[in-house]
Length: 112
Image (tube, rainbow, N blue to C red; front, side, top):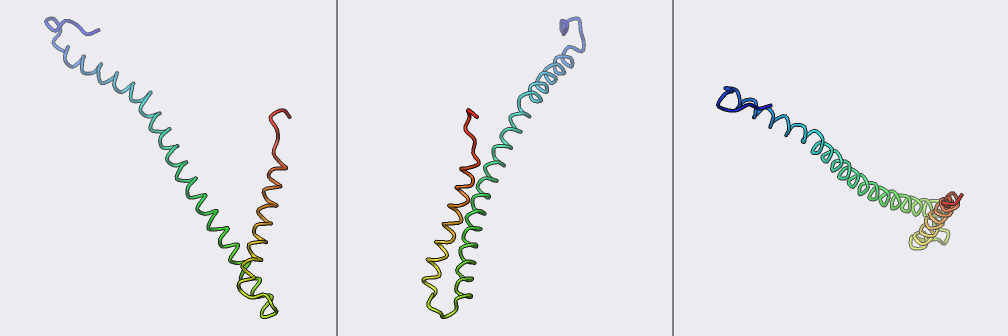
């Protein structure tokens, strides 16, 4: 316990040490945990945004690859570039519909 300043010569050092200890304890218990939570939220949002952007870019690349493949394999046999675009959209849409249907089929209700 901090003594009387009239009888204890080290009262200022002891008081400062106790204040510093209390502040350090609060910082360790509260501030460090808050910093960890905020870092997790920020890095999670950054990862989510980058993941969505990469997914969109991948879908664009797949659609463009299908367009190029259709144009390459059909050549000049009636399917031009404009029709290959529509066919690639159809194929990409059907693949996404199939993937969504498989995901919906694998879901579980909370009751079972």
